[in-house]
Image (cartoon, rainbow, N blue to C red):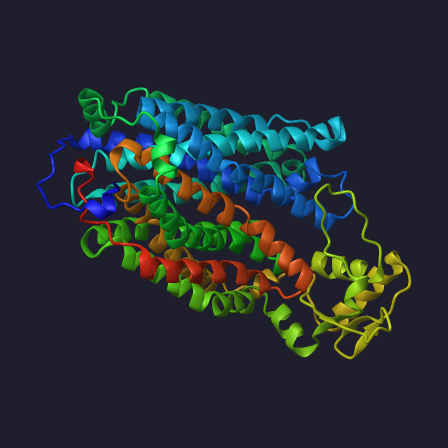
Amino acid sequence: MNAVTNVTHEPPAVITLSAGEVRRVIFASSLGTVFEWYDFYLYGSLAAIISKQFFSGVSNPTTAFIFALLAFAAGFAVRPFGALVFGRLGDLVGRKYTFLITILIMGTSTSIVGLLPSYAKIGVAAPVLLILMRLLQGLALGGEYGGAATYVAEHAPMGKRGAYTSWIQTTATLGLFLSLLVILGCRTLLGNDAFEAWGWRIPFLVSLLLLGVSVWIRLKLNESPLFQQMKREGTTSKAPLTESFAQWGNLKIVLLALFGLTAGQAVVWYTGQFYTLFFLTQTLKVDTQTANLLIAGSLLLGTPFFLMFGSMSDRIGRKPIIMGGLLLAALTYFPIFKAITHYANPALEAATEKAPVYVVDDAKNCSVQWDPIGKSKFTSPCDVSKASLVKRGVPYSNRENGGSGYLGVQVGSTTVGWTDPKTFDASLGAALDAAGYPAKADRARINIPMLVVLLTILVIYVTMVYAPIAAMLVEMFPTRIRYTSMSLPYHIGNGWFGGFLPTTTFAIVAATGNIYSGLWYPVIIAVITLVIGTLFVKETKDVNIETA
């Protein structure tokens, strides 16, 4: 029977740790999460460069960029399988040794990305090797988080699990912050041209240092006290996968954890700390250095809220904080992102209102501009028009032409008709310039303080949904199958619902032309999770995991 339905108020056994031991347990367990998000943000921040280095054989730039995002998402796609493999291993042989193995695989595959030859040198083998490294990372990550969260929670005394495990969530953001500093430092020292040519590899190679420190510290750790007790008593699970997923009592809790907690948590996390960077750089055309500094500032200001909400969840409960974050995100994403446009690129906002852009053609003549193998050519007037607008970051709407075929692109009162791709692109650019559409955001008009405030609000939403989640997942399942049971819903939520968010949102925006349309994906998922979580997920803060 799972821990949620067997709540007890018996006094728990006391686990006494010195202050140094507490710090070592938390730090060593959290380093894997630093790896996770360090690599995640490296790949995400450098997606435009990676698309040129590894997908230059793809004919369409928009397709190449989406294909690079798909390679990024591939690592997340296999995370649930890693959760099954390493979760089972963790419940059979122990937490310590399992997540020592995962960090070795993860750190090695991350650093190898920095050594891979480009498409120009070895052709299609380059993206194949890149995706292979992403798959290895994903498998390792599938076992990493569950091990770290379980290990810390099983060392935490009653009433402190939210506070202890919130450090794991905090260091995830610190990993992102670290990656931004490394990228900015390399760009500044090498210059933009050298960085894009070869310097982008350095941040990936830096992960070798993180790996060395992490392995050294984890080798000094002892096994979880609860797992040691189970081994002494002979009560460890003989078949963790069967107990976790073949018995309805526990499978029901797994499904509730996925659809009532982690799916919504994932999309809020990825929107607040990742999609914002894409939105600033790809849509609003804010220069990369300024965008990275804005995100770094918001992370720095928002990080303490992880600890605040983690500790608060020990007092008022995990569920109200997580559900409150989902509700706020769903209600405010659209106005916040519109405000980001206003303060980051006011010229784009003004031009959109003054001279809206329409692509006038029948829907049957327009394609969704990406394909699974990246070899399709999009040459119709409608497709060329949309590709030009997306490349420049110009919002547009689709307008049917009543079966008459392609009319052109309407920019306010001006219509740019079709000639040939090169001439058309120049004519469209001139019309957009005349209507006031900026080629890039004017740094002098960027309102830095207001953007930092807005981005920090988005990070605070992240802290609300993410800070209590580790403790809550640990408390939902019994000790004998905890590693396996909690890892799968976490990694399906974050690997699939969250990992595919950049690809999905970017593709939605490219298809519709509405720069805010991609937000419907996180909003809808957050609302679904909010409803299911509110109605069916039980509070867990008073569960005694030592008797589970």
